[in-house]
Image (cartoon, rainbow, N blue to C red; front, side, top):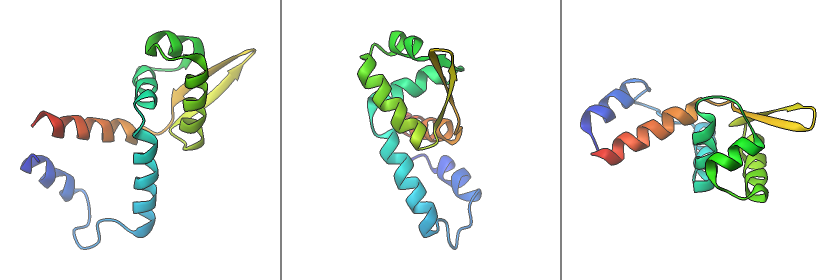
Amino acid sequence: MDKNFLILFLSEMELNNMFSDTDLTVLATKFKVLSESSRLKILRTLFDGEKCVSEIIDQTGLQQANVSKQLKILASSGIVECRPQGLMRYYKLADFTVLKICNAICRLSEN
């Protein structure tokens, strides 16, 4: 692990009690949702803005049924939001902490 990253990360938190039990529950839930690669593919398509389901299918190469299932999980966890418009449904990133999580994990894997 990059020592500078760890110092920067820890400097943003209280050192005596970094995570409450509630924080740990929230973290575990987010990591569980983010542990599925198809969900990460969907999120990757949403990082640059709102998309309809057909755009998500085209950009991820995933099957429609899988995209719908994963979007439901992402929406129920509060990571994405859905906006119906006529017969179409548009999804966008709602919880931008996932960008920070993904960025931090990717930076760690580079070292």
